[in-house]
Image 1 (tube, helix red, strand yellow):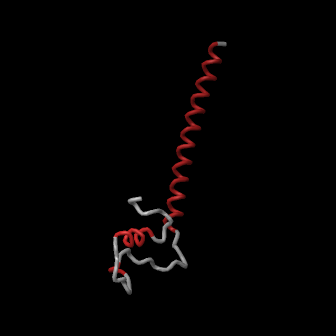
Image 2 (cartoon, rainbow, N blue to C red):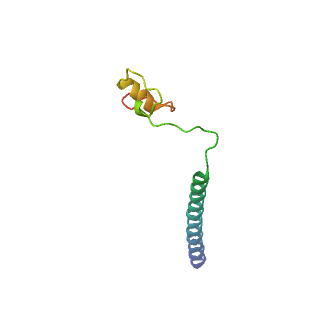
Image 3 (cartoon, rainbow, N blue to C red):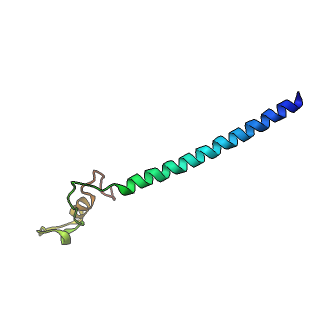
Length: 84
């Protein structure tokens, strides 16, 4: 009986190792698939976004302060300025 128990435990160890290796391999393939899908996406229908700052504006305002700069840098994101 002791011999049969040892064989069962050894088989379970191989099975666990095989399951772990399968999970790692599937995870790696999944990560590669997501990476490929993210890189192959081409945004469509979005206008070009200009760089921030009055230098990149067609008609820059006469009075431009630090708050204006921070607001311009955060657009079009909904995040607050970085010094908030």
